[in-house]
Image 1: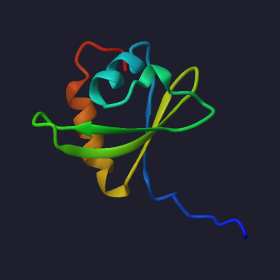
Image 2: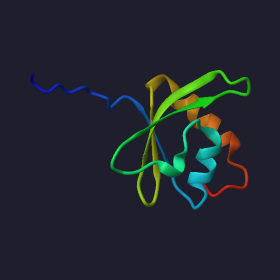
Image 3: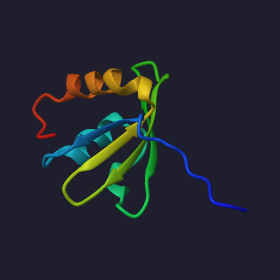
Image 4: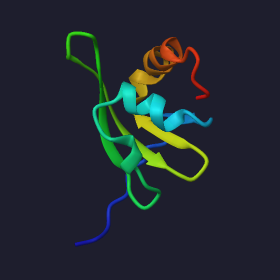
Length: 91
């Protein structure tokens, strides 16, 4: 079987930095962000207050930041959602 490649460049990509990025994102997603590593992506979801799915995403953690990868259609909605809850966090 030959390898296959997919163009995923249009997907939404957000970068979180700051000392509180792990704690902040851990409170916003369904997976334990503390376990995210650079070696592999971590699948996670963002739920609304009723527990319904708002976003399905992939996390990629490096020592200095966390990258979020999501469907292109979620770019602005996800950015707005995360910015809305950053209050006193350094994220």
